[in-house]
Length: 264
Image (tube, rainbow, N blue to C red; front, side):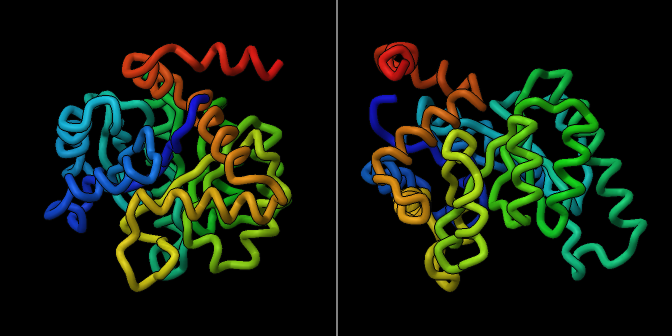
C-alpha cells in the first residue's frame, strides 16, 4: 500500500479528546496516519463514534462495541468492526460468576458480528487463552487481538486460526512483549495506539500520532526496517477490515490490488 499507517485501535470518542479533537487528528495526519479505527467502550459512545466518522470522513472509521465488564446490544449500529472481549483482571472480575457473565456477553456479540459479517476488535486482558478458544469455538475467521499480552504459545494458536495481533507504544516498556512480537509472523501484526492510554509515557496522554513509535519498536524487535513494518501492517489491516480498503480507495487511486500484484 502506498504510504501511511492504520491505527487499528484508538479511542477518539473518549472524553480526553473532546477539547482538541481537531488538533489530535491534524497531528495524526502529519505523522502519516491514513486511517483511524475509533473504538468505543460503552453504548453511550456509539453515536459520538458515528458522528466523528462523518466529521472526518475518509480518515476515521467507527468500531462500536462494549468493554467486557459491561453489556449492551450493538445490533442497530453499523461500523467497520465490533469491539468486544474478555477481561479477567482480578480487580475487575474476582468472582467466577462475573467471568461466566462476560463470556455470555462475548458470545452474544460474536453472534452479532457474524450476522453482520464484521471482523472483531478484541480486548483480552488476563484472558488470552480463553478469548482465542471462544473465538475459535464460535467460528470467527477475522479477529484482531489488540494490546496482546498473552504467552507466545497462546499467540501461535491465534496465528493458526488466522487472527492478527496489534501492539501500542507502551509495548516498548515491556520486555515480555518483545518475546511475543518476535514469535508472531509479520503477516499477522497490525499497529495500534489505544490512545489516550498506553503511550510511551504512562503519565502523558497518548495520541494516534504515536503510531510511529509502535512501528519503530516492532521493526527493532524483528530486525526489519520501519518502512517494511509500516507497509506490511497497513496491508494486514486492510485485509482484516475490508471496509477500510473501500474507504481508502474512494479517497485515492485504487493502489491496493496493484501493490499486491507487484509483490507476487
